[in-house]
Image (cartoon, rainbow, N blue to C red; front, side, top):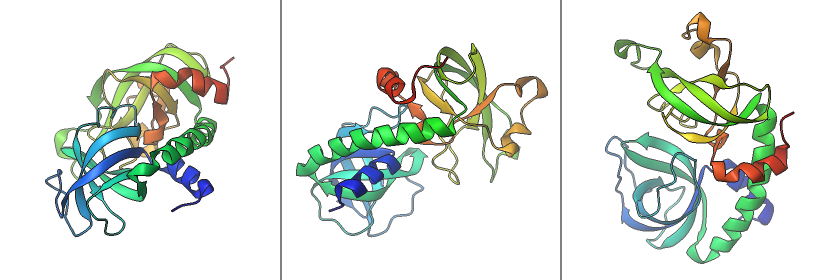
Length: 241
């Protein structure tokens, strides 16, 4: 089993932490995913941590690519995205036995503070807001083999870090990118705390000149946090002046 320090680091690196039971081996809920001896279907029972846009995992079956063979049983999985679209597939980073859930919860609490402090430091803007309609920046025939860049206006309710503003344009993939699975797809109507970085040059070049003045980019699944975490995050990073 990982040490307490190692477990804390793993919680910071893992977008998904949940209790679940292996129900099928050499099987997948994602049709396009290649299946091998370490591909299993897991029935999710209790979610300890997940990205803000993917809260409804409890009670669902998802696919997990294991590091090593595991017997069908209940485990606490620490995992990162592998494929999210037509089903959810995750890649295991480590696991605990199902009876060790409390250890995972404590590690998540420690890891959350470390992660938020690091991600907030990297972000130029941290806000609570809601994404508006998503508009593609590439025509369908231009998206093959590329990131399907899109843009959405983020209406801001509160600025936690950075220059005060009523809105910012956010660029990101839509749908998600297989080459960059940690870049979350833009989802219209999503209300969350966003930790925004400057977008990649390849995306900026596609944005009309008039929309380039205020551009943000969600660089990681961790950079979307539930509004329920507002008070906690404020304690970690302070209130914007």
